[in-house]
Image 1 (cartoon, one colour):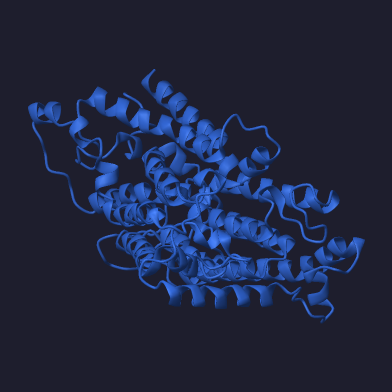
Image 2 (cartoon, one colour):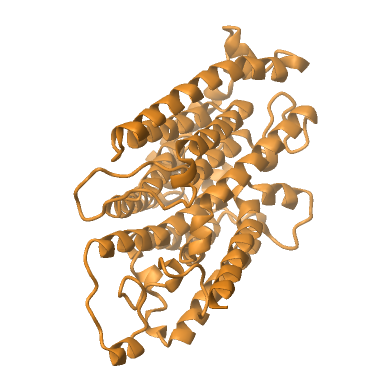
Length: 466
């Protein structure tokens, strides 16, 4: 009876995660908001669908009489959260500048505080083991939906964006869609196991499908992501995908604890995927160019100039940013000021400096470094690659910190990486024995840590008071 109840609870959270998280991971929420079918603002809705995870966490600790440790998932991951909080606090403080951009209901003033809220709430989702186990499934479904939205826009130009010769999918922005697809894919694939003899022995967030299906599922996800990037014809997206694919090859093949058979299988899979890419790109050119040759992909394959003038405008925007930085290098021009520029920065580092001065610029770098070091310490390769993509993507995009997919995935991985590392650490050392009276006073899980949720314990399958 207990096993059946746990199985049903686990199934509930997996389905809830699928329904609640996937629409945001595939940015379908933006399309639904554009068409007016969302019940409320997309950011508020995202926060609301994450609240049940927080409530379940609270109920669990009330049942276990362990409310003193209810904040542990946040306190044990304080470094990147504090860095993000300081970014948001700086944005609010510098919104008092005379040139801060308060139009559009103050949307651009509260962008970073909203982002911090989403990441903080997502940490509760990362304590739910069924959700963590389903990340690969969520990644696959999200990529499939994004690819479907792009293909639909090819056949029905202008559905989601105003560019007839370049599909953007749900988000309405081709570069945005490309970057999101790379973020989502980076969490769905397995980057292998570390061969290090250090304290933590394995690397990626555990995927229940890894042992049975291995590298071929990863190839499917990578190919889907590549197709999305190609269909968006995003040059920056291609660079981001290069970071993802390069990380996969290096970590999975050359820096993993593989047997000869596993290493050979991974190598053959990469070679096969490369051959598939070489075969499908010409086919895509034919299909995309069926309505004319006025697109980047067709021009590239025909050795023609692929720049449509956007490179020049982005260079001009960067030069404008440098001029604005020279005018106010320390405190910037006020939160949201970049929205008044003739051309948006297309670079988050420059945008932070223009808006919030050196404080905002350095604060964002500290946030990236602290997040990466946390994942590096826990040997969580998915998290390391996610942050690396964000760091590179921020060179070409100014909206990484308002991308709900990135914020959600970051919060989930922050919490799940701690649980994963503690599992591995405990497996290497036997737990101390406790008397019955001690166990009744301190509800402990498989790690012997009263602060760790049974939801992430190998002996449990979901957040439940069982």
